[in-house]
Amino acid sequence: MVSSVQAPHKVAVAGATGRMGHMLIEAIRNSGDCVLAGAMDVASSPSIGNDAAAFLGHASGVAVMADVHAALASSGVLIDFTRPEGTLAHLKACRELGVNAVIGTTGFGPGQKEQIVDAARDIAIVFAPNMGVGVNVTLKLLEMAAKALATGYDIEIIEAHHRHKVDAPSGTALKMGEVIANAMGRDLEKCAVYGREGVTGERDPSTIGFSSIRGGDIVGDHTVLFAGTGERIEITHKSASRSTYAEGSLRAVRFLAGKRKGLFDMFDVLGLK
Image 1 (cartoon, rainbow, N blue to C red):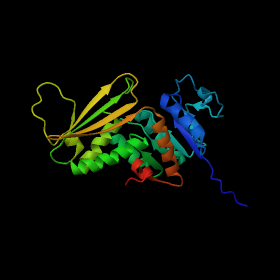
Image 2 (tube, helix red, strand yellow):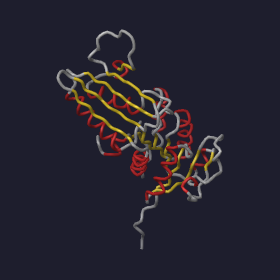
Image 3 (cartoon, rainbow, N blue to C red):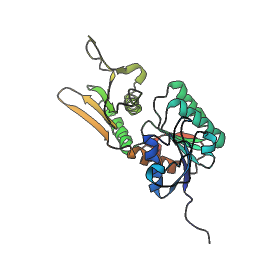
Image 4 (spheres, rainbow, N blue to C red):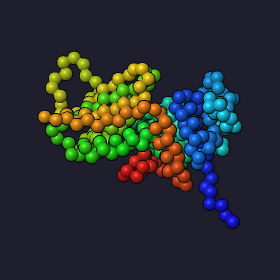
């Protein structure tokens, strides 16, 4: 008799000893259909060689490694929320080994994004600046709002994150701007305004403004303001825990099951296209 039980998704985690890495490992352990198959971190990490789930008081049998190829050897997919340079190095190894990837890293430049596009010719990748289910539904709402409010409304995007975040605006804020600009037939590179200071003159109605706040332990707040004459519409998403990113990442892992190559985003994962 052939068993109908599906084999678990074998997942590796990059940056396994960081805050997001811990959240991902805990989510994998609690998932029921995913198993931790690899864990990696920088060679200078004091946790190299330790069990990746030790922080949970649990023995996973997976040691934290600095050797990327060794960490990926038994894995089917890598989840990566590290830094652009590290992610691209990990992606190179994924491509060589035929391991799919879920990338939530932000701060990539145009040339670096092209490397991700190129890698997707050989492996399947979900690449999104925010893996949260709620924030991606918010992006869809913004697309709808932008089409209806394309004229007569000034658009400002305000985002807030913890003091340790190194890039600004956030990848999610930039994705919001991109979605809005595309819906209105604009080029974000030409219409974005990043902060204001001094005598700026009147606001150009064709622009999309960005403001960034950094402080404390804010996980991630994003508000898009459509300010018209006599009314304003605010669409806000607030993250209270990184667990939403972890759960969204596991949905991306499940989406990639059986896919051999191609570049996807969370709209694909959630069926929002």
